[in-house]
Amino acid sequence: MTSCHTAVWRQQYVFEGHVPARYIRRFLLDPPPGALGLAVPGMPVGSPGMYDGKTFEPYTIYLLLRDGDYRYYTRVEAPE
Image 1: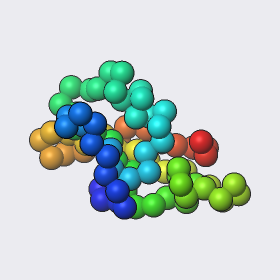
Image 2: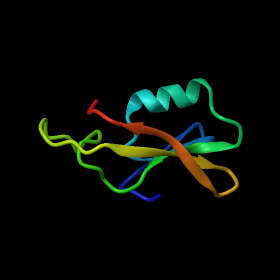
Image 3: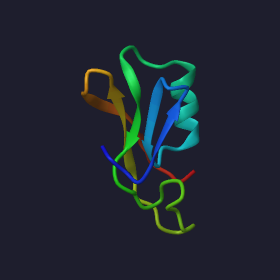
C-alpha cells in the first residue's frame, strides 16, 4: 500500500498516496469502525497530481484497518 507520500491527520488517521480530497473528507465525516485511513498504492495515471488533462486510468482506494489488514473502499472512475 505504499506510495510517494503519507499525510497524518491529528495523529489519528493516515492517507497514503494520491487519495482525492473528496474521499478524505467523506472518510473524516464518518470513519468506519477500526479504520486507520485510506491508501492509493503507487502513482495511478490520472490521480491527483498525476493527471495531465488527457490520460486517465480508473484506480482503487483501499481502507486501511488498525489490525494491519485492508479492504476495498471505492473505485475512482473519473479524474477530479
